[in-house]
Image (cartoon, rainbow, N blue to C red):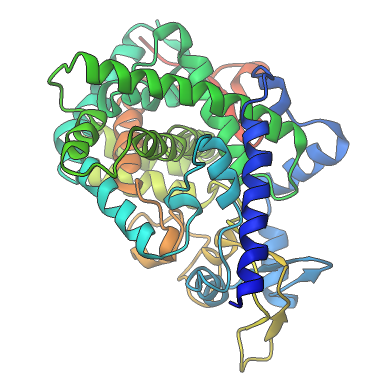
Length: 441
C-alpha cells in the first residue's frame, strides 16, 4: 500500500468511526417490531427460503454459480468449500457491524468479523482459555439439563417451546455459565436483543435500516448490562467459576485485556449463542413435527439416554432445515471459482456472494444419499457450523445445550403441536419466536 493509499484508508476509518460513534450514541429505544417481516416481497422470500431444495437442486445442475448484477452464489459442495476457505479473497462482510455493536470508545472487532491475522488468533486463544472444552461435560451439560427440567416442570404440560424453552435455556446459561446477570423479568427482552443483533450482522445483506436501528438500540442495552456485570464482579468477587470471572482473572496477568475487550468477547459469544441456538433448535423442532420418522429416531435416542445418538439425530434433522441458505461473503478481488472446470466463473471484486452451505449439504456429487435421514453420515458431509476460518467457535457448547434441552423435552409422553395457529412456527425476522407444544405433565 502506498503512503497516499494509507492516508486515504486512515481518513476513511476515522470517518466511519465518527459516524459509528454518533449512531451508537443515538437515543432510539429498542422496538422489536422493527424485526418483523413487512410487505408481500418479504413474506414471499420467507416462503421460498422455508423450502428451497427444489430451487437449489435446479441451480446445482443448470446454473451452479449464478450471478445477477452485483450478487452471486455458489451452490456445489466443492465451490462452497473453496469460497469459505479463502478468507482473504472472500472476507466476511460484517466486520463494521460487529464494531458498531461493540460500541465506543474503540469499536473493537471480534472473531465473527475478522480475518485470520495475528489479532484474530490472539483473541481466539483468550476465548478458548475462558470457554474451556472441559466445561462442556462438567458445566454446560448439567446446567442445561437442570434448567430445562425446571422450566418443563413448571409448564403444566403446555409451553411455548421457542420463547419459553429454546431461547430461555441459553439465556439463563448466560447468567449461570457466562456470568452476565440477566434479571428474570428481562429474559424475554434479552433474547430479543441478541436476535436483533444477530439479524443485523448475519441476516441483513441489503442493509435494512429497520434492522440496523433495532440492533443499534439492542447493542446499547447489551453493553450497559455487561459493563454493569463487570463492575459488580470486580467490586464483589463471588468466587464462582463463570466465564466472566475467568476473564477478569486473565486480566490480572494481561493488562491488554481491558474491560472493553472483555465486553466485546462476551457480546460476541452471547450473540453467537442465544440467537443461533434459538434458530437451530427451533428449526429442529419444527422439522421433527413435520417428519414423524425423524421424531421417532430422536425420541428413541432421548428415551435411551444416549446423548451422542441424540446429538446425531438432532443435527441430521437440522441438515434438512439449517440456519439459513448459507453465509454471505464479499469478493475482495477478481477471482475465478472452480477454475479449470466447465462451470468456472470469474467473480469481480465488490460482488456480494452467497456460499450456500444448505445447497452443498444436499449435493449428491459429494454427499451420499443426501435426501436420506442418516444420523451416522460422516461429519464432513455437514456444514451446519460453517467451514473454514469462521467455523463456529462455540459449536460444542451449542450442540451440548441443544441436546440436553431436547433430551428432556422428547421424553415427554404425547408430545405434539398445540392446535391451530399457536402450534405453527412463528418468526421474528428470520428467527423462530413461538411454537406452542403440549404433552402429558
